[in-house]
Amino acid sequence: MYRLHEYGNMLRDRVRTQAYRSAIDLHLTPDSVVLDLGAGTGAFALYAAIKGARKVYAVETSPLIEYGRQEAERLGLGDRIEFFHGSSQDFQPAQRANMLISDLRGALPFLGDAFDVLADAKKRLLTADATLMPQRDTLYAAPVEDADWYARDVERPWLENDLDLTMPQLRAAEASMPRRPPPRGLTPCFDGQCFATLDYTQSTPSLAPATLSWTAGQSRTMHCYLLWFDAELVPGVGMSAAPGAKAPMVYGRLVLPLLEPVELVAGDRLDLRLSVWPAGGDFAYTWTTTVCGADGEIRKQLRQHSAHEAFLAARTTGLA
Image 1 (cartoon, rainbow, N blue to C red):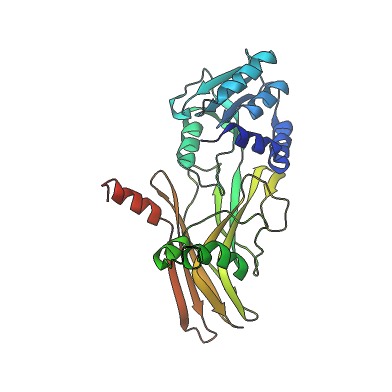
Image 2 (cartoon, rainbow, N blue to C red):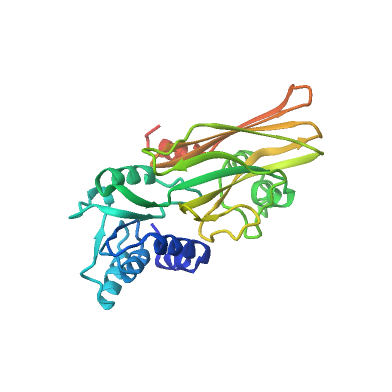
């Protein structure tokens, strides 16, 4: 659950906030009934009411939604915004909404039960022709060569520390732990390729495994994959977290480390088999790296998954 200063960071994120504002401005009418799903402190709900929406429902599991209620009363909007503290799956409005505003994302658009929450909202809380924001997220992956980052973030804590301890099992676990990029960022050395498109206008977003391939034009050493997404809020309005773009601050990119550095020579093919799947109330990642020489022979293969933390937690509580 987010803290108040984290909601403040979301509002300070001009890429995100201006994109949503543009989408709302483009589609809001005096007849709009808006559902702000995962409303946080109610900023988008307040904005929609100020811009003239007929009715706004702000639904949020955090008690911080109470601040939104107080601001609505201060602004004289208390009669047009209904605030609900709890799960949207327990919410039953007096009328269905014809506009949905939602931002149920983590570093990538895989967060907890977000897909189930959206499916329930479309079934019970929205009209059949409701405008959805966002409408789709397109996800990409690309290999990265960055020995300095790999040594500092993956290897040194477990192999070179002030206790003179060498902990190879923890180093291996660290190398299978998705994380956000460092503040300086990471730059791919191959073009990004699409591994999933989440179309929220359909019944359930697809999570089929994907295989991506790159061919090395020169010798390189790979250390991780960078994942990111482009969002289409409504046609013509979106935001991108692609490397080199002015990305949203609060989300947009994720790093999948390699179990060990992978050397490529010119002509090698690097294959990534990537799966994202629900696990323990959230999502887990499985990624397999295969290097084939120019002759087609497999020279290296690394299989990794991010579910080890959930497995260990289950063992400690007697569930596995």
